[in-house]
Length: 261
Image 1 (spheres, rainbow, N blue to C red):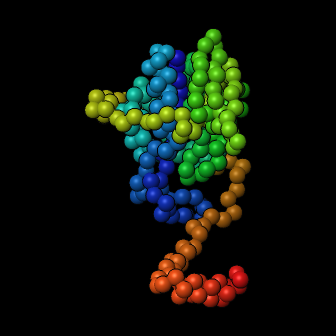
Image 2: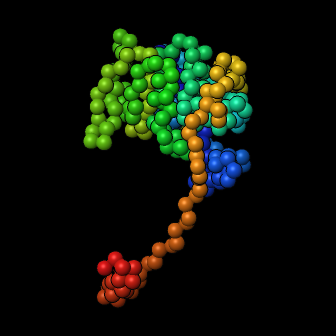
Image 3: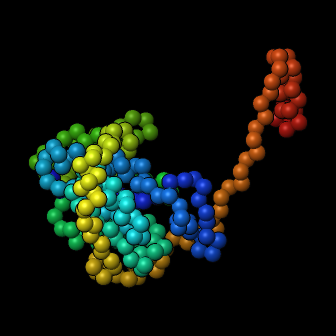
């Protein structure tokens, strides 16, 4: 079973800085990690490969520093890693990102399943997985918490819902996005770390993918960010101390002052 896992490198801290001119995140000098939800996608891809045979390939779109995330994925059991890196990809929204990843998947060729984390923690849109499916005209099931069966060119999965879960049968090849309930990601082994250090990372640019230039980067991104800012920090709360009568009276006085009672 040949599996392709799409991952994203995201800032490791919530103390991000905003470029006031471009309204985009400043990533330079900020520690980066694999998007946490993508770790579950990697683990599920490796488990499927181990169970059914085949190959697990990981793809990420980003600057050269994203190579570190791909090497980490290799240390976790992925066979091959591909970095989509080109200045023309800069400023991509979810539509342009989905198109670019879909072009890379088409270039890879034969596969059975594409797995994405349910969303990235820096954007929280949950749009890229379904966007890739639309580009490739493939079936897609989101928020998958369990793969129950793979048989006869079909996959049965349990999809998490607000009020429970839904059992869905999907034709393969297809695309799923996974939630953290699907598995417990493994830690990299020593052998995996050594293999990752020596592994060759394929780097593909827009020309390699035969991209339509008006569909990538900012030209291919219809999303317009009018303004982006960090919310003001809330002042520290007040802890009331003393005997219960004094604390109750102080609390009542404060609530009256605020107009709550």
